[in-house]
View 1 (cartoon, rainbow, N blue to C red):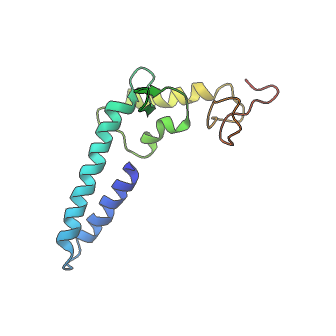
View 2: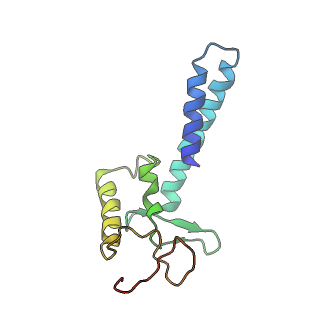
View 3: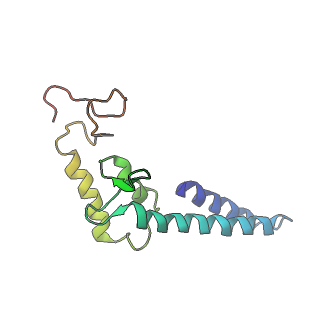
Length: 132
């Protein structure tokens, strides 16, 4: 959603520079989407970021706790440049990517999409002979 809001902000920012009669409309939408993606970034920092493991986690609204399972999407906000400035420090960025490196070490094929075992879902980890 962050990436979409940012894209919409950029779209309307481009159109707001146009001298068409819709310039005010695009300027208003540009401001609205900027506010939306900035708010989302702050909320992601306060709800999804775990400073101890230097990772973002999904939040379970039923248990009211983060799901601390590893998925490559745990660091997606870094790739999307959606990380709030309070988190976007060199220490946190290096720590987050070290977390991925440490998680992938036992897997010769690279980073697993999920470490969930016993599932028949295609993206979950399938244990093969000789694999951890």
